[in-house]
Image 1 (tube, rainbow, N blue to C red):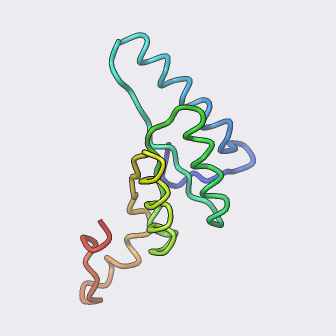
Image 2 (image 1 turned 30 degrees about the horizontal axis):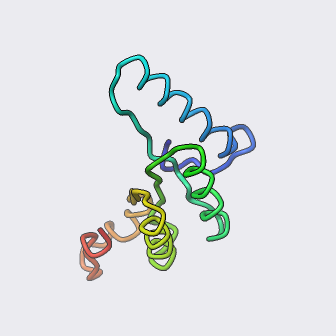
Length: 113
């Protein structure tokens, strides 16, 4: 799942998640290897994010992704949810350039890693 995809009219998140899992299951069956994908659960509100995370878990995903642009409180909130629900969380640096362009802003990206 791409880090910049949310839920555009031509590619809604539910259908995209199902298509991703279908491809993962097909590839696993064909190769005998464990496959996976980071389903992007980034949303406009935490309610949207939790809804997408619950759905991803329900259809068999074990890892989800959010974008840095959601903010630190949202990152921590979904990190707690993932721990409680045995899910892996990938934090994509989409939005990092807002911090990285300015070299002396005083924030190191490692702090939120």
